[in-house]
Amino acid sequence: MIKFLDIGKITESFEPALSGAISRVVKRGWFLLGEEVATFEKEYAKFIGSKHCIGVANGLDALRIILKAYMELGIIKEGDEVIVPANTYIASILAITDNRLKPVLVEPDINNYNIDISGIERHISPRTRAIMIVHLYGQACWSEKLEEIAEKHNLKIIEDNAQAAGAYYVPAHQSSEVAALKTDVQLYDGPLKRTGSLGHASGHSFYPGKNLGALGDGGAVTTDDDELAALVRAIANYGSTKKYVNDYQGLNSRLDEIQAAALSVKLPRLDADNQRRRVIAKYYIENIKRPEIILPAPYAIHPPLSYSHIWHLFVIRHNDRKALQNYLTENDVQTLIHYPIPPHKQLAYRDMNNIDMPVTEKIHNEVLSLPISPVMSDEETAYVVEKLNSY
Image (cartoon, rainbow, N blue to C red):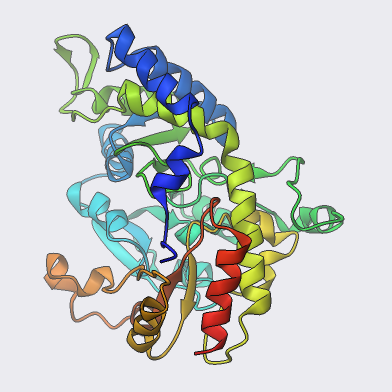
């Protein structure tokens, strides 16, 4: 069986450094708010290109706390609206409603599954305070138009970067420079910005299945805003900046020392691992030949835009997904669905169940994720393609 994601093999590939880091933490006997977290926060802030990084318990908490911090600052108030993609994992929306804010859903672009930026402005109302952008499946969702909309309406942009650690945004004015690279599998070393450093604040997830995965749950907030960063750090630690002194009604949401140590081992290889994913994605797109299988847009594998996608997931579409998935399972290829039910159709959001989101619903009815990971071999990749072409 070709596993969808062989986490055991990925973990093994970091040995013995990974076990050594865990042993170091255990021997030190300090498990929260210690040296490992401080070191990782510094390293990850530098990697993302942000001034601040605050480790938290998970990606959902990262988004929850960003919004909670803006509410403490008086920038957002209970009942205000946050624009968010309709096509996303439910965590993006949970973070909004958990703070008693109203999510305003915007349909995706069918070509890349990210929010359709051209559709944002018509959803802005006098109560709109922020736009939450999700870099879905690992592809950067950004544009100069988005920046103009936010500035025009004085809105905060919050990035949900849970799936896109390491992706770049390539502005239109830099496209020709990046496109001049000799090969589409080398890493660009120019002045591009990474996702997670584009908006006013960003939430990150280190769930084990992510491209940068911990050995359990983990997350982070990145921002260049000094005041916001200090407030996020306090809220994540019971609302406290000094032990037993609580200035805010905070949470207990902290990245622990073992997770931070493991992430510090993995981070230096993230760009290379993401590049391996790009190679696999390129092979898939260039070699899967069944016309009824809808592939990601070909432009996503060539410079300059190849740098904007780190292929956390390789997602195809088919109008009879169930039959295709069953066929692949029978042929020892494990696939998953990201995601089978859109947020507005979940029982958790009964008040939105009657909203008409045809593009989102079409995507959720047809998407299927193929195996992709840095430890997937060329032979395994070719086998998946062979089975798809024989369907």
